[in-house]
Image 1 (cartoon, rainbow, N blue to C red):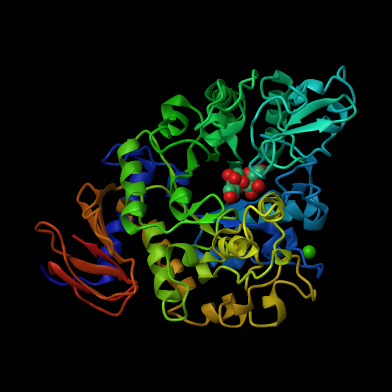
Image 2 (image 1 turned 120 degrees about the vertical axis):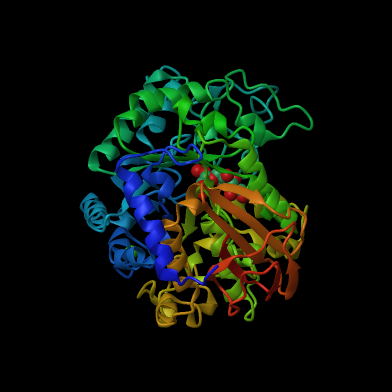
Length: 580
Ligand code: TEU
Ligand code: CA
């Protein structure tokens, strides 16, 4: 076969997308084509993205000022973390008023400018919908706790104590009991997360109507959908039976009797009236159970974040030594569980998890860039909508935390009180875990340039310390370097966007057991691609399984031009894409 250059391939691929988009809306292998399946999403954690007014806290005008940066990266959808009025017990995941912008982040007018700027650039905006719980400062809860007869009493779960203690043995995700005794009425309220995050009672139809109302408020403003916080927890068994020994509380919390009924109602009453994208955070839902939420025929949500990948990278807040075959198994299981009626997300990091390159790659000086490029390749060549977490496009790393005083996150602070202050665990062991798993690893400010505090803020004291490596790892340096992690992401996002097989193609892992090389095909009709990646610092001579021969090299993170061969000479942490 004659060696073709890149340009003719593009000509072959682009027209096929252009032609189909107006006429045929189903792919060769049965997928209904939609914008949100073809999108690449970028997650903004507003508090840490860009501070515009020097108070040390990222804000909405700061995000607006960086829209060109995001547009040129090539992402199409921005997921904005909670931007609502909040006392910030859990960094905005505790909402006091769903129709007001957090004062620190700006005003509703600032939000409108952001949204307009996003639309102007032909991008879309999805916002965080946090409706499993509110803040205890929300008007509904302020009323609810006043008396047993208050009209808002049933907006939350109130129960009398049992044997001088809480109503049952449910633990909170943030340490201690999930029940808090409230002195005014001498009853307990349920909070699966912090004490300041009481759980809403979705069995109350007024709660559901109020939630649908606030969703419409934002949709009518023009937002393009929602990321739904812990949405799998909204339905509870009102009898609150004790957990039995050996029962996993997450699975129990996620198996409420009316979850699907409520999601279908929300879809019918709200979502189906808009052209939106929805992604549910799906704690406690296995890969096998995923279609119960995302199969389009069930009319619930478009896609979910499965915790399968999170459970590979860490064990709760403890470090976990994962292997490549375990990571691969997530994608094979996903492919087996989902047919063409279902869709899913691809993510490897977010604001609750440590940094991508520190967790799945190698953040040493030698391998940080090469391994970040391999991870970009994994993220952008799997079937599902890819979610890039802010800063990962620069290969930002975990933070060298030394003491608990450097950590702001309530989950870590509560765990410290529960486990270190009671001497169940040593401070050293705890901090060792934190350096690998703390949520604050990903929440440190974006590294924009090499000036003080990385150009994130003009304040001397950002709300969370900037990673000390900002002088070498920052956006300005990477924009100036054509070989940077940023430019690799940019090129690969563009490549994916014009290559339908990488979006919709069937997935097959060619060697699930290999501990160093990840090799798979993506096939859509006549379009066949082979992705090969080394997940190791070692160079590897790799014979492709069976009679597979690598075809033409169409994308690479490395220097080799090798192609049309059955044996590859791979460098440590290298990624290649071949056309077969
Ligand atoms: O996360 C839920 C969740 O799964 C995490 O809190 C998880 O328990 C923790 O990271 C394990 O280490 C969502 C939000 O993404 C998170 O930021 C919020 O704190 C939480 O819900 C409560 O709203
Ligand atoms: Ca600010």
